[in-house]
Amino acid sequence: MLIKMGQIMKNKKIIIPSELAYFAAIILISFSVAMITATDFGVSMIVAPAYILSLKLGFLTFGQCEYIVQGLLFVAFCIIVRKIKAVYFTSFLTGIIYGAVLDLWRLVIPYFNPEITPPGSLPFPVRTVFFIIGMFLTSFSVALFFKTYLYPQVYDFFVKGISAKFNLNRTKFKICFDVSCLAVSVIMTLVFFGGFKGIGIGTLIMTALNGMIIGMFSKLLDSFFEFKPLAKNLSKKFDLK
Image 1: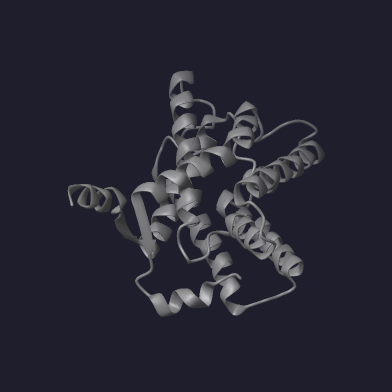
Image 2: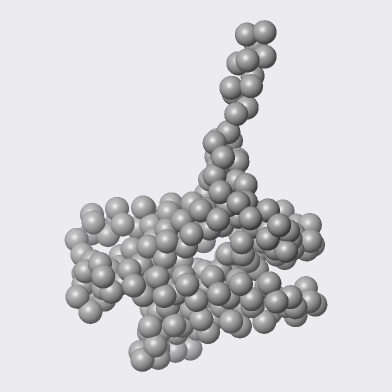
């Protein structure tokens, strides 16, 4: 009897609404991207194309350039899966919210605002701490996105949708996707600037570790939490299979 009770307690998980995980992921990932950008060690390979584009254009913010890049990736997703559903566009809506919150973080926090604190101008120890925290927060945020039925921003929606459509290992496909984004970013910065801007040692570190850390956080979340939708009927409309 005691053994059975112990097993029940061991298997009991904390229930978290999927919708809460969704909004937490948007807030955290936008914050972490703003933090990493301030270090000037190199942004994540995922957001690097948008950041490089914002540096080139100047008149568009980082968040606004996210709309352009994620819009193009969304079109690519629809072509690959050969299907377009109205509900898919909620992923692009997530990208719009994310981009707006990203610009907000960079506006209201002086350390993240490039007009007040140019990227790379903070002391090296502070930049290092910011980078480490930002990297882990980014991975945790993506893991949270994967636990909710609501579609994440297009980057993660692409990984989630393609891996589900073709029964691919999500962690391995995520790593391949990250490397592809890095390659595109390198081409962009060389074409636009003839050198490396927005890409650095931090970008390489995140490319190598991001997929693995996301997988680690995903397993930890599964061990202690169970994500359930509050709107069960609505969640069925977001099934990618």
